[in-house]
Image 1 (cartoon, rainbow, N blue to C red):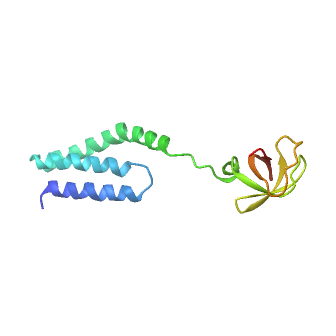
Image 2: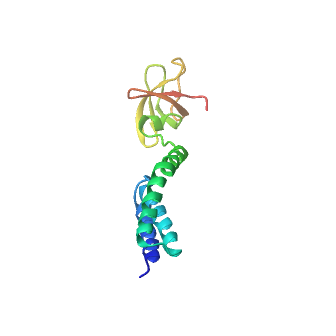
Image 3: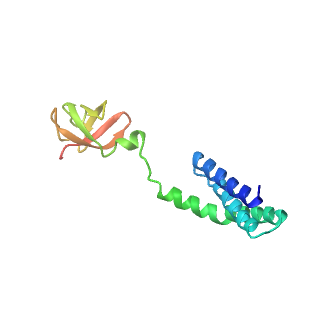
Length: 145
């Protein structure tokens, strides 16, 4: 089998393996090195030259392209709010009257103790409120919705 075909197969295997791995891009850079060696083999370079091309191209891609690619991909990924951070801004339904000291609301499928945001307003049962913050195990809610 021709060496250039082996390099092409290696590049494909590395690219597939990268697709199954987290966003680290190491295998992608080696796949790029294998493609460079594939081109060298296709134009008739000796096997030693192909291996050198693979090594140099892989190292160059790892050093120059991978950091920029990771920065770009990580910056483009949306920040997913989880836990308490994910509750802020959500709508809730008042289960027990909410005032500045106590009350209960349902946020999603969970029941939370709650207080009103301004501390003076009383929010009636059944009204829809917005979660402004979480203070310990208490949702601080606002009722002008």
